[in-house]
Image (cartoon, rainbow, N blue to C red; front, side, top):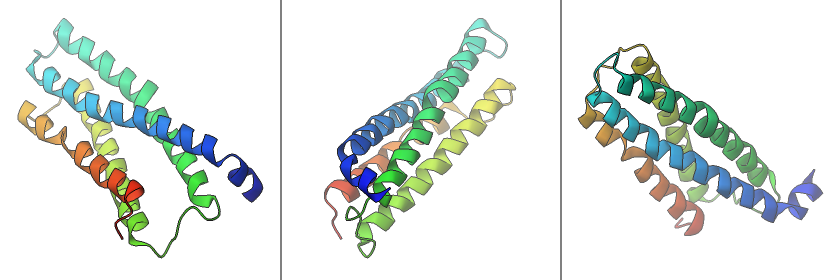
Length: 149
């Protein structure tokens, strides 16, 4: 397995980056849909359209992208010589990944609220929520690229 990971490291890293880009695109867009959905009247054609868009985005893009991000990320972590586990950056990065995964779960729960016409949050709430993955992404990229500690 080690030989496979070493020999295919660049490919694994490329697929990990593509997966993360797709995951993040969805994580940025879904809260934006929620903002617009808040403004739609319950039961309206617009509200029902948002439900379809949100479900498809989550199930067809965000969930598979998160899974593939994890799979390729785990392969990268298992590749000998790639991660110095005594360095602080990897632990900060993994902590931010934990928070990103939790946010993903929140997006999923909120979608279920909208689907059941039970949303109790305001558009302003979702505007603030929309910033959270950006902050996490900034920290993660700095940890992985700069490795400040």
